[in-house]
Structure formats: C-alpha cells, structure tokens
Image (cartoon, rainbow, N blue to C red):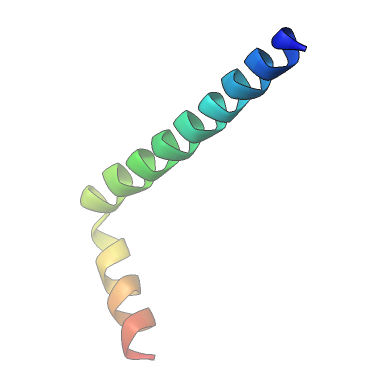
Length: 46
C-alpha cells in the first residue's frame, strides 16, 4: 500500500517535470527561431 502511494507520487512528479521541461524547451526554441515570429503573427492575424 505504501509502495503504491509512493510510486504514484513519484510518477506524478516525473510527469510534472517533463511538462515543465517541454515548456522550457519550446520557449527556448522560440527565442532563437526567426521564422517563428512570422508564423506567430500570421496565426494571430488570421
């Protein structure tokens, strides 16, 4: 029972960390991508 609860908490923490890492990676690539700004403006205008 305790092992199940512990593993559930560990898996939830791992998923949360992966989501944070994904968001950080996307924000990092947006800063260095010049074509992304054009696509972003096109998406917002349309």
